[in-house]
Image 1 (spheres, one colour):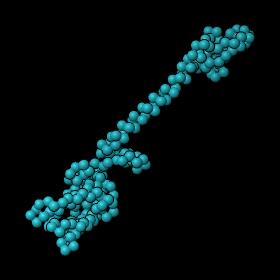
Image 2: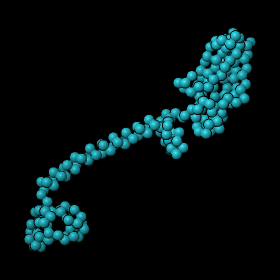
Image 3: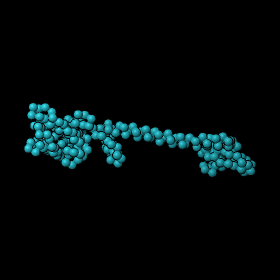
Length: 210
């Protein structure tokens, strides 16, 4: 019995010696039907087994390398998710993925495009209470992370008495982490203040920037 390979489709198969003698060494491939001389295309079995073993051993390495490459791409995309979200062409895809898989996407913040509209601030001296009512508007053309609100209390001479910083979950009537283009949110905040407070100052700032 010998191992031979079809020259047309490269299929390997074994042929009995008696069958070869009966047909003068010519065989027909069972895969593609090609007729050829088995002896001419004979394959050394030891070499074929070594080659098969090498191919088999390369598969796990190839699969592992592929998975590693995919993981690197995913990590790179995750790290760049915020700048990618600023691109018009990529923004819908990034936001869709982050809705399905929590990825901690931080929307860009342009503080100058946030506006406190119709502010109504009342300082109730008798009860030492500061009541703030307003509407926060995102005037940017893209979705933005809601900034923090800082309330600075001032003395009668203008000196700063105290400052308190509040996240969106504290001062928005219906808390949300971001506002879309032209979207507004209602601001509601009531604070107990020192008796010597005579004025206030409201400031918006993004996390880490004050």
